[in-house]
Image (cartoon, rainbow over the protein chains, first blue to last red):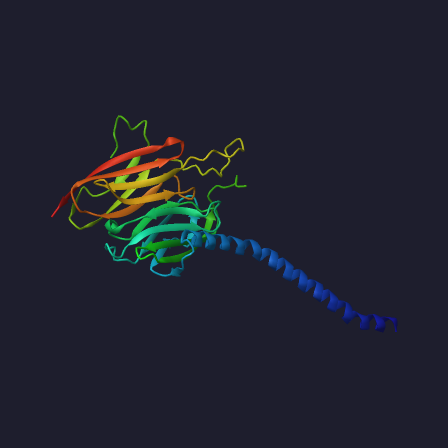
Length: 162
Length: 116
């Protein structure tokens, strides 16, 4: 009799436990997701601040960077933009932003109609696995972008980051 | 491309550009300069953060006209490398200039002969 009562009670208590577990799991997922989305927001806000609030469309720009990087201290990258580079239609500026380095900006380049071929290369540092966005401004004032994800095995040194 | 006597006082540079080009041809210039690009985020051996020492600006002038400029941040690797383009218009000089923290500045001049 006693055992029967106990077993009848059990479903009620396990439902409670399930609720507690579910809410706990939900909470931890929320906590885990928050920093990641905050970092992406930083990248997005850096890009929109660069564009001065103008619409940044995807396309025309290609950010070439290795998907898997062994050494984050020296990572070659090339940004190429589809543009005839004539006096009437050319790229005026290219900028590269990162998601998780201590500083969002990577490099900003100024171009003109005499640049000839809308492509620029450099070598950068990456602190960790993250996204990079290249933005190009055209002579008509429009902004175009491309985002690439990079997995970094050995990070560039930022242990002193506060 | 160096200046042998001044080289010890200046950072070493390695510049790769054609000496001659046809008018209208797009040429590529690749330039590297020896510089630590200290980020200002990294601790030294004593655990204190090393002071920032970056090259912040680069420019290339072709017969006086600015054809390419770059603003560099701490995410640019040490010994910064830049590869860029310009259209060969007239024979003359390409003046490459780097400027940065602690009053760093360096200028290198290249000669370009343009044929028709």
